[in-house]
Image (cartoon, rainbow, N blue to C red; front, side, top):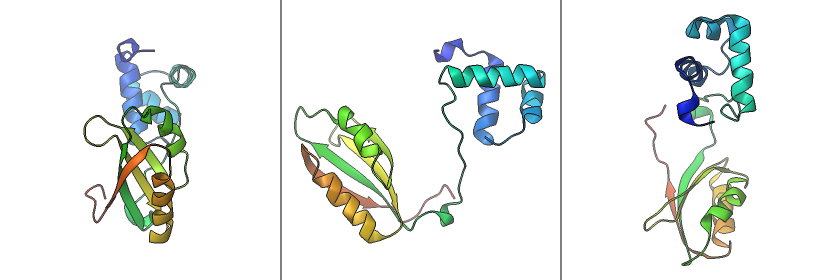
Length: 145
C-alpha cells in the first residue's frame, strides 16, 4: 500500500498511534470520528498491509543505557552495505543502521550498558568484511529528553 492509498482517517489514526501506541480503541475511534468496530477494522487492515508493523514505547532518556554512540562506517569500494545493514541491525546494542551516500557509507546508532560493551561492539563492527574505517561518535547530550 502506498502512502497515497491512505485516506485522511488513516493518517489521523496513524498520528494518534504515534503519539500514544497504547491509546484505547474508544479514544482512537473518537479521534477519527468512526465507531469502535470500524476503527478496529482499520487498525487490523493497516497491520495486515504492513503499514503498522509494531507497537512500541517512548522511554525517558535517563532510563536508557549509559553508553550511547553513533559509529560512522566506511566500506571498501563496491561493498554492498545494504546487504550488511540487516546483520548489523541485528547485533546486540545496535538500535539502527542507516545506509548513506557520501563520505560515510553507514551510520550505526548503538546503546550499551557500559563503555566496555560499546567498545566490544565497535570491535565487532570493525572486523566485518569490507569495513575500511569506523569512527566512534559518543553522545554527550540530547535535546530529545
